[in-house]
Image (cartoon, rainbow, N blue to C red):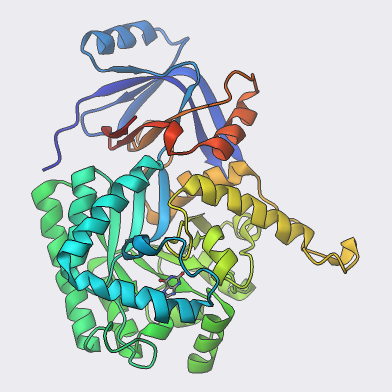
Length: 449
Ligand SMILES: O=c1[nH]c(=O)c2nc[nH]c2[nH]1
């Protein structure tokens, strides 16, 4: 059972993004958190009641003071995590996507019919993500509802905000007999059952958990299942997640089967809505990107994973300029790292290579694509505001009315003075779990060093 949150006041300097290229810095403020775990006030040093609010919180033992080398940031939102793949993070990344799925991933995911194995993995993964500053995760589970509920219970136990999907995959041509839903009807009825069980777990525990409609990707689902999942998403008005135009092989498979791109196919089955978050998108064309925008659907940018399986670099800046919804995903274990800090770095680096090009046998003027680079501010925006907008939650900002999902991080090079904008970059490039000192979800302390 989630404990009632005590109101809290945090005193310190903080960063919070307001736009894709603008991160605001507020020096030495009070961030007041109410008993519902929401930020109710942000008070600056010059406001009349600063001292009074501070003193009252201090007397009540409810004041947390940041050290001079510490900063408050919004918690990060990971839009794409395959929870069952944690044991293979970093394995076989030199294999092409379909081989990696068939030889490593499906055999591993099949093991989650064993609930003890599920518990062993999930009780490691959830605290690991929290220790990396990830306060919200959008998880793929497996086909097994018992294991998916163990993941939900781990999220409740450790206090993470979690969106969790029972994976649907029933296409006998693209899934192995040992790891597939028995039939389309089974995939749909077990999805429905998972939704009911998540709703009662949420009511019993008060945990921050939400079920998600989860067709694994178009290749692994029959038309009947894609259609049925679209109907369930509509019936319950739930978030939807899948993979979309993620590699040469996968993109071409969908063209061969439907004569259309993933985006149109997902849309036709009612799976591209303003609650959809689709991973990768490296092969999206301009029409697909516009369809995403029209539908209000989000892209989960997974820059580390894309370097291995994506056969291309997602043009993040193009999506940002086009006002598409976009956030960051670790894609454990297509991506080896549970850290959105590391993914933020890779997002910046990949965008630079996309802009400059990589083939130096060509003249510089013929390499790359213009206006593709992003700054670390944009990565920070995607890890916070972009992720929250993608999930339609009031998170990712340090402002009144937002949930108090926060992290306190230490600037390990604070001895070397820098302007606030540079400090943010330094934090984004240098932070590791060792310098993430405290993490809060809904105002509750969930990790402390
Ligand atoms: O990176 C990926 N990881 C997966 O598990 C997966 N399944 C389908 N497509 C996928 N891509």
